Length: 392
Image (cartoon, rainbow, N blue to C red; front, side):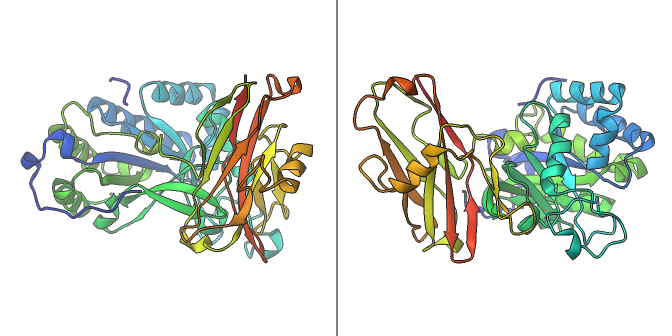
């Protein structure tokens, strides 16, 4: 097996597979929900078999592990070695969360414990959930997942999201920029494959779908174990249409490289000085609100939680210091034009850093961290990713 490698939804043209050369076919992903209620060696064996079937047909998988799966795998050197080998082969590791209203809640929520009406105990916040998944994913930490109640429980620092349903049409989406729980994500949907009828519907729909739309399918390991032939048939179908596998991607491959909410026009700044252009994206729901760009010379990790860790809390991705105070006090000065203002009709904003000449020697080797927040009378409504710029 080789190592695999905001757009409007386009209409479907009713073409058959033979009419679509590979470059016109949709990028396609297959997500695997590893449910928090069935993390055990028997189901892991089913996952092994699913991986083998996919690899035999050059299909990369996007694993979305529940927290109990992460705990099981991290505690088992053999399982962990297998997951690392799968990653080396081109599969991707993400997370899967069941919210408080799910029959098999995983115990993690940003609701205050007093708001949770469950017999099961609250095990932690969504930040705790992410902290358990991070070491399973690897050095980058958790980057994507299918997480319940994402409108108010999406953890800070996870830039990519999958979602979907049981309708075949859920398989087809563009890449979409979403706001989730005060943070930004790039999103694609998937349809749930679990039956021969859905298999036939998805094959027909895939034949009608063109790039740049994305085609996503998801299942559970136990569904594969119950009827492997359904999934073997889906993989065979994809391989026949796309023999080189050029359009078979992981969620990470499909969404990586899309711009985050906050971007800068440079990654380094010389000691001779210059300008940095900062651009913030949100959406029209935040139009007409106040915004601030913030600066720190103390890094982005761990950052700080505004208003606590529970439901109304918002994480800000920099460590405040005297330069943060400076960026607030000197907002809209000649040094920091645009650092405070009102968002546009699209919820966006822009700012500039202008050193007005060479930097002092104390800046040599420093890292500038920028973040942006949007707020109204009710508090912070949006917090961006950090942007870090090295002074050289």
